[in-house]
Image 1 (tube, rainbow, N blue to C red):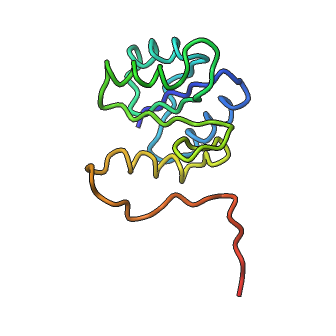
Image 2: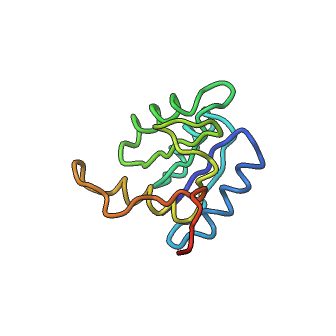
Image 3: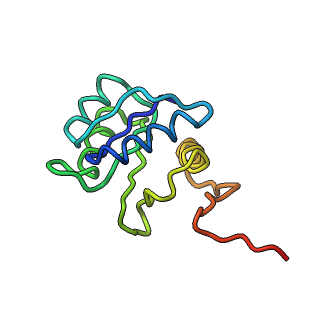
Length: 128
């Protein structure tokens, strides 16, 4: 899967790019620093998956998602944020496992229940 990483913070882009590169079956095709760049890059690079921050200066990730999906409806857009939200993934959860689960969920026919859930890396494991 071809991935475009979008975030105005260079440090998160670097981390996200490393996660993509460590994820089997995923390849980084580009980076963007704002929503407008993301829309243009999605048209040019034709990624399968766009990993994008919600809060960016100028065009938000939500507006960029709307525009990307209007021109490329099959694209999987995963919105992430440093702030907690029940509907937007936390940047802390970005791992190869999360990336794979997001892609698998996107490809699942609508109305079906996922076979597995994305593990929460903050959950502590306890031994009996």
